[in-house]
Length: 429
Image (tube, rainbow, N blue to C red; front, side, top):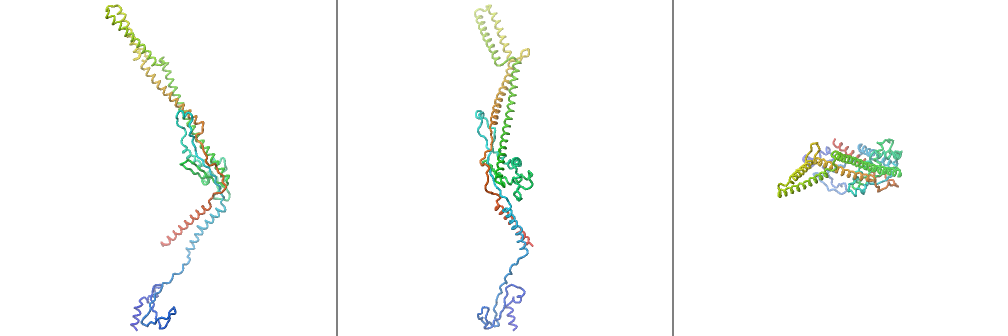
């Protein structure tokens, strides 16, 4: 018997640990009686007392998951953080928010390209610049607080946008210019294509007629702004042209006065003409001198003692002295301090050059002034409208489904991030 018990213990080494390791694989020895049936009702083969059948136990199935307090808390946060705000936003958008109508107006700044008659004849450049800078100025002006003030002078924006029962989309009770300008950024959108220079303005209002009225006021004030820019440009051009013409006139007047003073002081109208007359006298004297010398030589050859030689000699000396006197007037000053003709001619040439330059400057300044005057008589910049302010028939805003989808997406994403952060911190404990 002791040997049989030892053989049974060695065949089942884990049997002693069966109760201490629950759920693990264990081997159980089941004695079979002859003629007994198993669990299926089939007759079992008899096993002798010295043999046993080994059966392996299957692990017990896991117990069903129960709802924990954290699950309830997460579901509660989902309801509070996601579902409830979506319901509130949907109720507000579809039950409280007022319809908004859009009015659109499109325009661009145009620059006159046809030149005036003086520009076409004289080839002068245009005074106006490119319209791209004017369009940039107009784009910023429409979005500025100054535009809000200008439109408010003709249209009561506070009455148009102050709607009771709509706290989010209406203007509200704070109607100061800062709050009105901030609200203007939401209701008036400006779209600017820098490539083509086209501007499109979309105005929203709770009434289609009000939206069109505000759009018309924006267009009118924009046109006035462009006209003011054009007027300022023309005024600057005229002022610069007038100033330059005044300087040219003063320069020409001074040059002419200097020439007149020179003529009064010297008594010579034109030194060049006067010197040409003196040189004519010298040339005539030289011809007389040449004739006298020829005559004297002839007499000397024929009769050296001829009494006419004395008269010829006196005449030659007189001619030579006269020629020298004429030439000395051109070369140097005389004893009375009168300036020589060389100095007079030099001074006169300087005065004449100054006068000629002053005359050319005056003609150029006069042409520029006439061109600026011709430019001022026509409108060089104007606002061209390619889309007149429209009158809406269907409310396009607020885009309720889009806004509700954005709100739902944002709430769900933030809730999911919060849940993931919670489980991440919980797993680290």
